[in-house]
Image 1 (cartoon, one colour):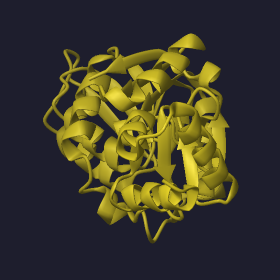
Image 2: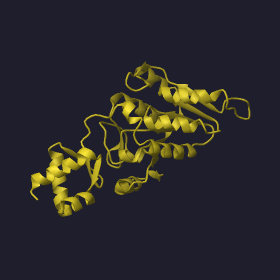
Image 3: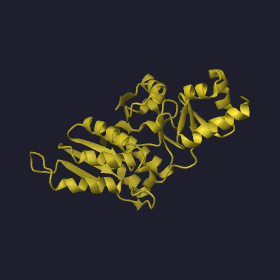
Image 4: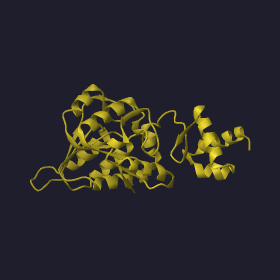
Length: 263
């Protein structure tokens, strides 16, 4: 098979799949691993694909709209949210950013009968948690779960607050944990976001937290966004889905000291 034919086939596969593993390309194209490696290097240099751990990914032009992301990989995100909630300790203050995974996290937090303070810029997260405050009390009679919605400008695309007012408000708190759902996570690129506003808020939350915990469904592992907010070594834990295609990327994260929890 000629190189241009291989290029066309690789791009055809990526038109219907987010990522394709190297092993799949070897079997599909009936060529050596070295040939695939050279083809992917060439395609990446042309700006047509993005190499990731264990294969190749479609070149992301834009992050899907928030409404669309709410319907994607819901069961995977819920499994991550349930695992993340179990790792929280009574009495902690927790930062939660605005994302579809953290929206599901809020639903799981509503079921948690323990004392927590959740500080968030996500309007849906705040509304979901606020509905539990009047009915859940600790032994002293106070609300077991308290939610603080950060002020600021309202994002018209994602239901959350952002901007300088929000950033300044974050600096008033010293959280035990920052629970963030980024665009991507990898050993080489660290924790990355696609949107500059989301990245600036994530950076502020990380700076004001003792621990950084990442919630990332399998599609985000080995992926790189535009804006870096933390290195892999600065990340204490990653909760993600068990996925054969991510084995190498997760091994590299563990290699730099990240605690990885597969669900």
